[in-house]
Amino acid sequence: MPLRSRYRSIVDLEEHLHRNGTRIIQVFLNLSKDEQRKRFLERIDELDKNWKFSLDDFYKRRYWKHYMEAYAACLNSTGTHHTSCCVVPADDKENARLIVSRIVLDAFHELTN
Image (tube, rainbow, N blue to C red; front, side, top):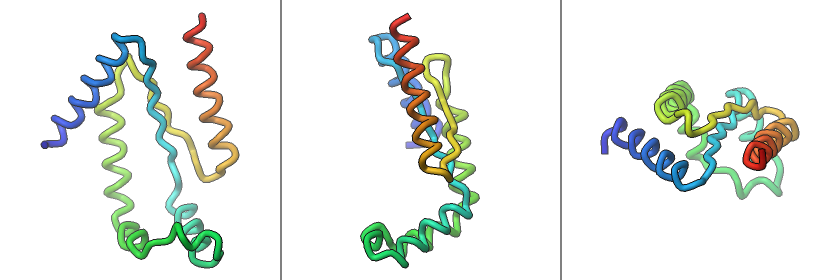
């Protein structure tokens, strides 16, 4: 399926859900390349995180720029007035969780007002 068709399918689904009373919030956790590298190394060095490690992670890391371009294209193509699209800085896990929690709480408050 061509990319534009996929994006259109996402938008159509979200519009359908909106018409039927579902609130859509898109959240993109934006992790920096340096932080991703740090987390990959922790997966190797810390035994309790080894299960998360895959050699494929390092292979795919070569395509960082392409992934960032793809995420941007997707977010730009699927964001509508029916959905909230939030890009959250995610290098600091605790703050990222607080930000996402605030986004969700704000959405709940909007529903009750």
